[in-house]
Image (tube, rainbow, N blue to C red; front, side):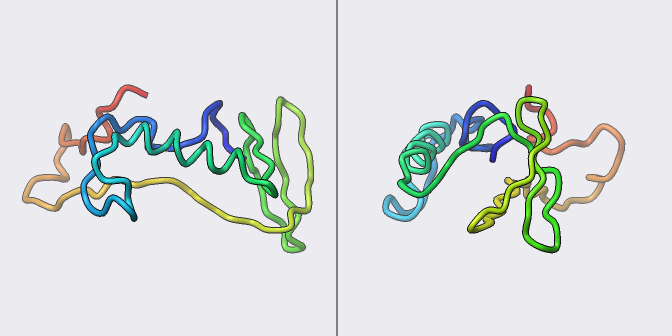
Length: 111
């Protein structure tokens, strides 16, 4: 399930090239390209069904999942639940960073 119309999460917003290991983190590629590459792998998965524009509203005790898809509420019983809640900004600590008007880079992005 993804509430957006495109898989890839925050990676689709990353235009810079990543660093690190080529094997582990696709170093040298732009984040948006990594997101699309990983999305293709997921969508091509033999045992994976992707629902875009779908919001998971609740996971019940009996492992049923309440989903809003295309304006219709559905309850499913998935074989597996993998929660990928998304990225968070690593805000650096410095004196004065809690003052009004001080924001991390993620807060100033055009969504």
